[in-house]
Amino acid sequence: MNKIFILVIILNSFITTVSFSEHVIKATKEQKEKKLQLRIVDIPSKFNKIQISPAAKTKDLNKQITESKNTKKIDKILNNKSLLSVLYYDGQKIVVDKKSNKIQNDTKLYSFSMSKSLVSYQLGNAICNGHIKSLDDKISNYVPEAKGTLYENSTFKELINMTAGDTNFFANRKAGGATTIRYSLNYVNDIIAKKTTAKDYLTSSSGVKLSKKVFNYNNFITDLVARAIDVSVPGGLKKSYENFANKSGTSSEMYFLNDDDGWPLLHAWFYATREDFLKLAIQVSQDWNSKSCIGNYLNEIENMKLKAYKDTKSDYSGFFWYDRKNKARHAEMRGHGGQRIHIDIEKGSILAYHSITSDYNNKVIWDLLE
Image (tube, rainbow, N blue to C red; front, top):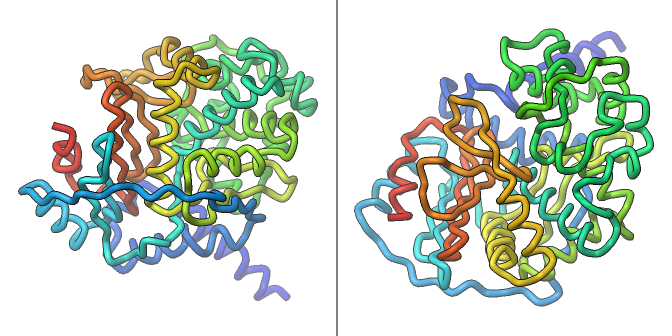
């Protein structure tokens, strides 16, 4: 019995260390591939998977693949580094389709924080369908467990802009690094190691003094918003994502993870194939340009942009990122360790790539946009 207990502790420590660790970059090739296996197989096996059926009618994306100096350089990175996939859709067709032999086309890849942007999209749909009144509504009107906590009076607008006034909460977390981002990672690692649940984490914010409402990126907030959608929309987030899948024409089953209390873990743990991630992004792009309620929502959050941390050189709003150096109208879904979906809102083009870790120069990928 003691041996089993010790084994569980070691396994949890291993998962915590390797799931969201900066030193993955310095790992050996074999260690990186083990981390890939951990993320796509081992971690999902520990949690309840909320399965999302493929679209009733799938959409086939046109392809006209082109080769260039850039794509040849990408081939080398795929063979020698941790880059897993690159897809570039020019607004009409896929022109770059590159994949590492570490994965298959039907491999369910992890989103990491790109899923935050998808939660925002689902929030927009919940508002459009009348299940949530507005961005100015309080989270505690939908998640009763938020009453009496730091987040009781937080509005959806504050939450999706990461301005809920929770700097003190994360600064008070122990066993972390020197920044609020590092304290936020404690939440991720504790969730994966099953040391806490989203509900318990929310409860632990009770009694924490509200801080100044400035940008403070963290992972917990997304799960709080996701919970509100899950309990407010008929059929929950499962139904919301199935509707999203049908609009997008996805080809394969997708899923996300729930914790032991049944709360969605959508700060990072959404899974889909590389091409289905692209299809979801194409649908978001099309909706952004539509004269519809969801289009109005996406344009509204775009207009709420605020400056993120100085060293990021980025703006942020509505769980989306915006690169200040890129003058084209765009929005980005960003995930830890080299996960990125870039949407050119005006052109309708999409650049999507996934990685084990960002141990390569990604300039050659971004040059595809030129």
